[in-house]
Length: 69
Image (cartoon, rainbow, N blue to C red; front, side):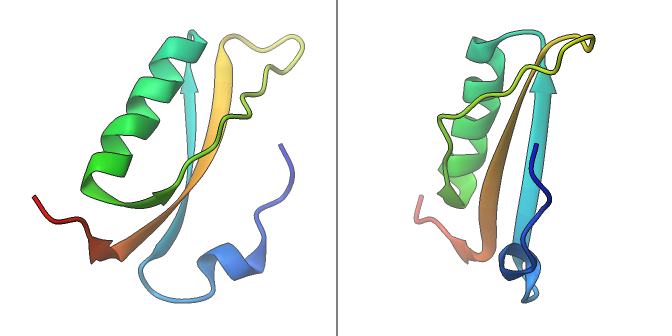
């Protein structure tokens, strides 16, 4: 994965979350759960690293902005 951009963590309440799981379905499910709680820039790009198990996905959260229930 590319390095985390300073812009994505420049202010309190902004977070970068990297998810690692055994398959695409699981990383997308975790991302979906995060998106139900906080404003989330979702990603569709999943990464597999040669020689490492599973799949990875990075998403960006704004935990200052709670979604209405």
